[in-house]
Length: 394
Image 1: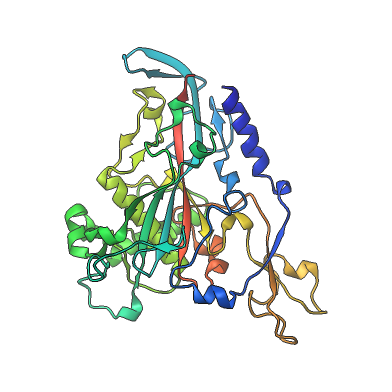
Image 2 (image 1 turned 30 degrees about the vertical axis):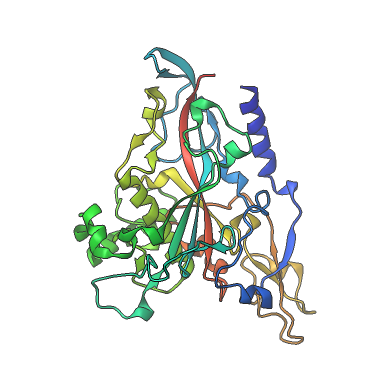
């Protein structure tokens, strides 16, 4: 119990902007960065403190007390009752919070792992290269396709925080590669994916896309919608559950959509479970199988190329006519990388830590991702937070 309380204090302190100084970095990619774009190094381990959105762990609800909980979370109660392995009821206190648990990286290069800045070795260059196959007659320039690497990342266990056995559902105790798209034939073939998702014939159409537009409006208004399970909010239609997206407008939006699709596939296969709800604080208190993705169970934070934990890009123009006030969000400064027209220098961009460094599945990129699409950088890494309800008995 003492360890849990100390963990609460740590999360509150580390999520405060006062804990870190504001960093000033160059928003324009260097020559060395451009040369490593085939498979760049995101340096996740190096930024495990500054690039992690610690404030996304909040609120931490204990016995129904705390901040606002997501839709679908366990009901508020002071006590909870769970059965142990001998079927004997045990009383405890309900606990709920968002736990960083998974990392997913996307790359247009087969076998590239931006999380480690390396590539998997493929002994047969023509085998499992992950070429997208679709039955729709579209031009290649109008589609997008990214390979994924899905990592287990039980950060709290690795830091020895929230390690109570009643609230630790991960069977993976370390940072490890769980799945990758090159070995998944369903990810690259729409027809094979139909075998696992036969409902695609009902939802992969323009009518369903119109419904998804309405869901996007609801999400933009702050609502959480679970009924339209076939939608990925403002990112588009969740179906088909493959790596092919029929647009190439913005890679941030495309990879956000693919993140939702990947979680949907894992839930259908039983490789991701429902860890929120009253079943976690009563009865057996074990995660349940959820064939449809529980969208409110997850939050996402970009780690690369521009970590959300470092705030929004705020270009500071090096000119005599500019002022510190002009560099704020919503100011009239030019985009990062254009620099001062008088001297040709690239503008510096400031990335302050803030308390809004993660977003819901389906949130519009206009709220968080527009300035995170850096030209020539088509590799993206996201940290996935999962809401855990549990009954704290020891």
